[in-house]
Length: 337
Ligand code: ADP
Ligand code: MG
Image (cartoon, rainbow, N blue to C red; front, top):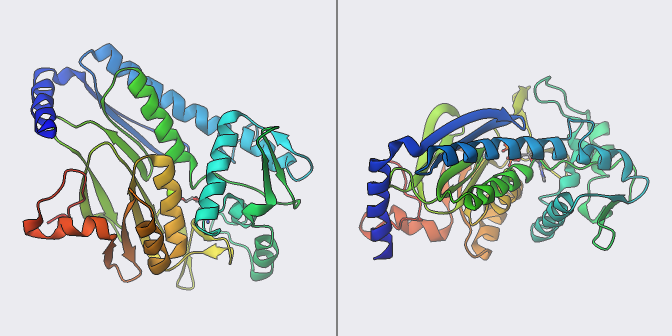
């Protein structure tokens, strides 16, 4: 009943004040940022768009490993020598990353960067076997010591590095959504690359997100209607190069220091983008069987996987939506015709 009412109100609002819808894109954090939102007052809507883009830039400046003056770069330079005190925001995100590492027994590990930095996908550069093995020995989240009392980070092994590429975009999307809520903007989508979060509706209908075909730039394998959730996709097609028939891409198995190769893409649906971002990278590394088993254990988390043969796999909670007489729940994915 409540849902139906919202739906009707949404239609009335969007039909009556189309001018309040804004959409903007920008390239920040090495990826495409999209914000689309509604507020009846156009000036407030514009403030929302500006706030999102400014927040994305701020987080990039803090957490980019490519900016020498970023807080993250300072950690990478100094934390192998002594504990480095960091901002509450960075410390909190590192704690969250640690928890995901524990949950995934190290499939997700921000210290993957100790070997990850030897790859440059644009320049088609990768470590040789000896370099890879030496650097992979430094990958271990348990050797990154977080001290809440001092809010400090310490690497037990010199040479360790971290990179938040598997969780920071989700964090940024969540922060932006909070800013929009504070402005009273209830209908919005914020996306950073493969990480999106939606609130309310779009022109009186649920937001939808297409899951890309990992082997066809313009193809879509499924379209999901979404209500107040986050969605993240990790794929082997974002940053990669091929050499001797082998695909080297940006999701690294911390045990081998090489790209994880069991899947083509993983989409995770969950309550917030920090969680879905970290889990999409995690499940990609864990692979089909272990990855789906993890998703099944986590309440409120759903997944759609594309395996190495291009076949789709769904977690059990969303499978019923595929049966025609089952009635598609608003929050459940439906497969595109
Ligand atoms: P994107 O949206 O950038 O495609 P993903 O969510 O798929 O990102 O995560 C890929 C990024 O995660 C990589 O670019 C890298 O920065 C980071 N990463 C790669 N492997 C791991 C890992 N095993 N654990 C944590 N982070 C990782
Ligand atoms: Mg991710």
